[in-house]
Length: 351
Ligand SMILES: Nc1ncnc2c1ncn2[C@@H]1O[C@H](COP(=O)(O)OP(=O)(O)O)[C@@H](O)[C@H]1O
Ligand SMILES: [Mg+2]
Image (cartoon, rainbow, N blue to C red; front, top):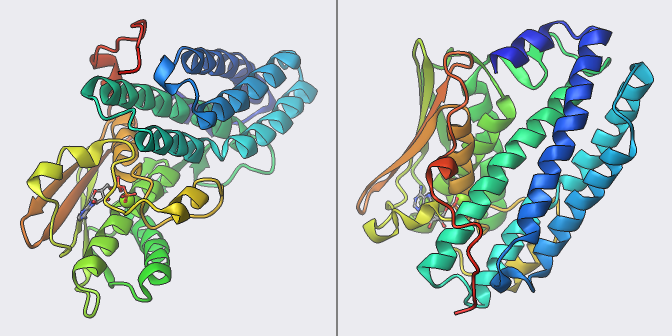
């Protein structure tokens, strides 16, 4: 992270060329690893069309990357930039396709066993973590190009990023989705150390806050649709970290579900045909239903050295705590999947 900050501060042509060469080589390797993992998915995932679609998306990107030579001058950098713009656009659909794959598996009853469910959790953790890495490389390259460079930013890192501002934007977004669903939305109040700022990736804070707030407003509306109490966001700014707490009066999460809510595709939204349709539309945001919000938010938080915890008070509500480390204070945390032994080579059979 520190290296990214150092490099990005001076986007001269030679820095751009150096980064482009690295990105060109590194992305191809990382896509190849992901293709290999998808090809090695166990038999019980073999007939899921969405997995094949994702594999084809990566295959096309890999081939296109290998098709152009490593950049040697500014023309090479431009060629890579054009390709990466195309790749970012095509990869926009990957998350929803993976969510569709998991929903398909669930519908077919393939993840009812603990072994299958663990396998899938590990696969998705790995895939999503790898995705953050490739997205960062891609976006870092794109934002270093002339015309994309903005004052106060180094690539996608905003040097004086203020979580309170992002909370307001995320609240607007979550309330808008809530209004579409319920016709009304609870107020969201932001208080505490609203001046706190840090060098960070605003896009990830926006994602995490959007997910936590969507969950909070949804739970609030489900419990109290006529007179929804406000959702409170409190910010704490310290020397090494900034924390955000989202508090709702949505009735809390029952104890027996408190572990499950961290599983990919776990949701309390009734699965109907409407959701199936949405899974095929790239740009349509959802208030809830994919079941990826919490696990993915925690993965993002942990990737950058922070974390998310949920605390529930039965019959009252939930508090979600989100910690962000100041970049440069820590190196990237080791993702959980490295610590979990994944039986990759195991020959999985349908049960
Ligand atoms: N603040 C909350 N209050 C009550 N239940 C919650 C809250 N946040 C999450 N949950 C439960 O956790 C589930 C999973 O959340 P999430 O991963 O965001 O997926 P989704 O919102 O798509 O269902 C939700 O469906 C809901 O049952
Ligand atoms: Mg959610």
